[in-house]
Image (cartoon, rainbow, N blue to C red; front, side, top):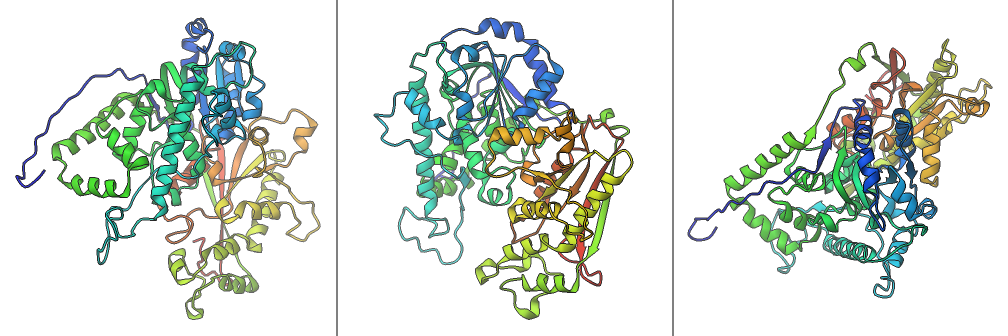
Length: 582
């Protein structure tokens, strides 16, 4: 592009063997079973390929922290011969020797293991970089995000380094520098680690040292690129977890041999929620799942993680002049990758005979609760306060505080009583006296703690014993969280099992990947997830997807009951006025 208004376009391409792909089957269609079948198919060759010092015959399965025990359970269900090692954190890794890693068939680890206490410190120590690097960098608590690429109003840039005149947060460049430095140091440590020699009985050797037969990444969509808006809206995967996952997968390293996780045969990503609505995400996915280069890869990563504000401005300035042919090729190659490397099977006959019954339980708040409901609308002018107010009516820049309002709505006594009433009705139904119930809440507004308090108290005032519940505490280790979830995935075998609470309280952020259909066929949505523009989320499509994912924990193939009950609690005003829940 230039004053001549002409541009010269050169096209180069190369064919590459796709070493993996994406299994994007619908929820309950058997992604885990397919993965186990892949492992079993090449088991004998995998075992023979194991060789010291670091060539393991195992398939490394990288999963969200809460799914480690579930994966082991599924492997036990469909195979009798696989040797499985579970790595929950740094402490559990210290119990595993190099020899054991060599002889294992499957190693399961959490995608955010870089967050595990002392893991990175020990990696640097094993790599003998402690002297060279004075201080081990901390994992950045933010992921790569697209910048604002337009300036509104009077455009008077202060310097050439700030061409958007303050439209972007001044800390964003510092964050990009911090994340780029972390990535550089982390990858440098890994290269040094692989130059070291360990004995077969040495324990606690970092996972990055080994070469795996193959790698399988569950819920792969969680680690793909995001915009700032998506990070604010999508709380199903915390931003720090996202950064940890991106670093472990080596998402910004094009050379597959220099990535943290090396494989010999293939790498597969599993997801029931592909989120492949942009070329940027497909470009990342193609590079991760099979090392396929799609045009625009280098530019994409540089913009996302490392470019300066000035570079972003210049890149964006030139982008509109990018040839239509180039843009068309990017889209075409992205679609080609999806056609070749992604498969998506839907549940069909497996769901025949299983009905989803939705129950909306409408309750009315008391007059006193109405007063509290209106009072909690902090910052709203008295004449504007009403039962029909929506989150979009709150303007934080004007001093409005929506947090207090949302939490008060979740904590209405009438809502808590209805939750307890529903649970008691279910547990008093013939044949369901010992059934297990899942309650989903919006953890971003503290609704999980509120639901737990209601279930642990006599809110009905009739003197009956509290129902009680199990919840995932923020201080629970990964191992403890997996154990708690397993109580609601398998039948009661002992008196201790039967004595446990029948109710499991989860946040929507726990929805991804859990299989609860064997023991649970009743699910309660305690608070609505979608709270509209201006609140903790503003994307009804994303929220509907997250809610469907939560329901999919019990309404899925393998459900042992013919009916799955989904209860929604809707609170109205004293005279039936529609409120936030409606």
